Length: 157
Ligand SMILES: [Zn+2]
Image (tube, rainbow, N blue to C red):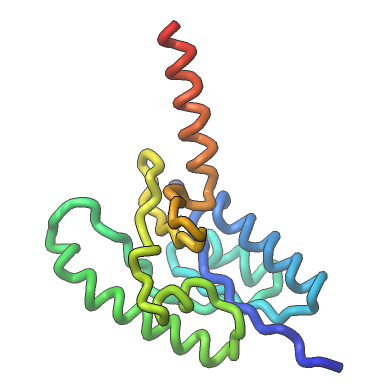
């Protein structure tokens, strides 16, 4: 029998992020027999939901990207480097073969990483689209923004 595909899924935070992640994990496990490890943070819902669903969870420090210049911004490179080192260790130890975020970091394509354009959302967007047009995270912010724009247009009439 062929070795199972090993996948490290990075993500988490709110239920809007954890649930799609778990759905993806279930799909990979059921369809391809993949071994899924999840990379998340101590603060997110993944802390409980992922082990409950039966996947190993690796913890990295949550590093929010500050929107305005602040002391946090100065600490960002160090914290980011620490989180990247923890992520690299998780990738190595889980022997993962598919890690989208790590690919972006390794390829030096950090311009593909941005903060979600959704109101009050500071989630990281990993833009793997060909034309680099992605603005929203996977937590439903694109949908919310479209609904809000639609309502604003209706209200104008
Ligand atoms: Zn968002």
